Length: 207
Length: 284
Image 1 (cartoon, each protein chain N blue to C red):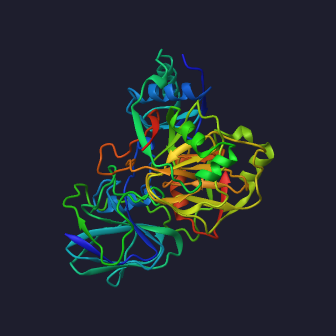
Image 2 (cartoon, chains in turn cyan, brown):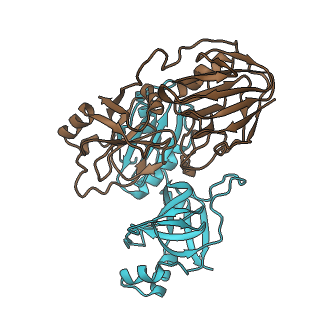
Image 3 (tube, chains in turn orange, green):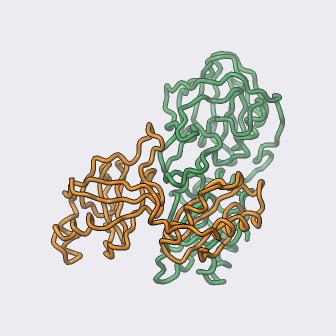
């Protein structure tokens, strides 16, 4: 039984708040399975899952009852499930030396920590295919750039706040760049087009 | 059967119902901002309510219909001419090959919706041709010279008449209805009072992603670090500068600022007809 709280989010959604990341990931997985027809999407957040539904097809109370039932199921911890994606990184980002220095680490130590911990995609947003990666073993906070770069290349590996991420397409960006990967994270010709989804585990390697 | 974009004006986009269930990919809903107006135009020519049509921003666009076709417009209150005739919104017009449709500057509203029997056939991305200006997926914004194929069929009765939402209005909608949002409790009663009593001004930094409203700043909760959570169409977010952001169809999937209120679903379409400088009240 996952502890959770329901908060109304407009006419067509319930925000479901969990106590921590593990519960949020498990909750997301449970809610995404066997969704009734009226539930149109589950939107992952860092501590929440938002259940979107069609209020012409199901009442708010019915959906709330379904959520409670779905989350009452005993489930293995989310960290044990989910595909693992290995991302080889050339640690040559423009911000790498500065970020290491700010954190009081050598560049080698920073790389060691980035590759030495298991990451998981908690939620998406900002750009198609972009996953906000978190890790219980990371424990570092990195400020964003005061002024975002006008253009960050596709494949840039970055840090901001307590997250890591990879830019799937070229775009403006305010995260600190520590490396580059040739891994393709967004490809409309592929099925699915996104390599990362909430719950996907990620490991960075030197490569 | 096809039509040619002679000039797209400020912005002409293919829009339909949009996408659902793509949050995992980081892709939001998109689709026509004024869904009701798209439906009015579509039903006039016997299409389904959400058959792909064109969303035309302001005046200036011109289209050439390259084959015999049945067309209709709805949405903004303004003159749309086919050859020399002004088209009544929500009415079907049978046109011959070579007819030119010209969109004049609206008197009231911002966006026209153009429908053709059979629908516009355009590149589908993730199940929809709708162009999302934020995610940049869908059929890209149309440019001069673009040729769009027109579908065969449309099986509904022609001239299924629905009233155009802005019909007979001299001024646009001044109010939308809102409900308290999931993070309403982070704000004071005074902030809520400001939100629902103030007459807000739509700022120039507004587009299909969001309307940014100008007015007295609400109080951003001091020291708040809200874990990122879902952003939905209609969500009204308060960022650190206290100026409300009302998200629309091309919303980001998640965001870190608190959602104080949500626009009610039936009011949402009206937001697509507001222009910078116009005033808006939030009734809640």
